[in-house]
Image 1 (cartoon, rainbow, N blue to C red):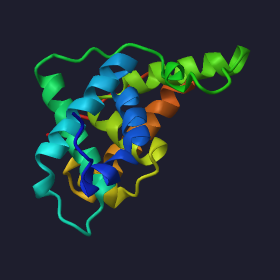
Image 2: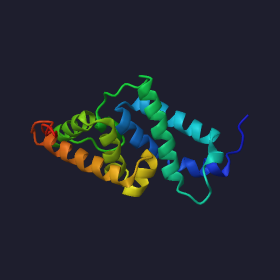
Image 3: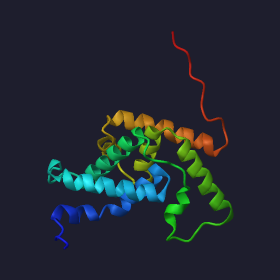
Image 4: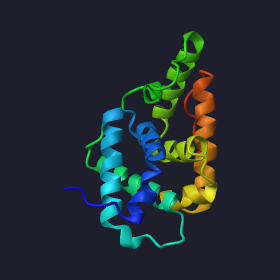
Length: 172
């Protein structure tokens, strides 16, 4: 017997496509992403009393999902190896050079440290503001800005076939 959905659940439902897109980019695997979204929504429903009416539900749901993901990574429950273009199966598939560029972008994104990848995806893919991304990741806005800058620079270098890392300067 199905129970009627709560107003909270109704509001949360509208963010499922965005949560799935972010989860797929984080995990790199459609099945793992669907599991992540389900786990995050389940946790959000259980913890819905922690969400304050009038605050940004989208940011709160992304925070819940990001925390679930971090917990899964820490327990080595998530595998991250499938191309980004698989998440766009309902759209016309790119051909030739475009397909290769998407493959290269996916590989470059997967090469980023998780902290940088999360910021790049939240700001670039999900079009969140720096403040919203800081809320989701539970870090200061300055940390978001520096991770985004380093992540974009690293992506640019990887996409241009340049060496992945710049040697660190030794400070005494």
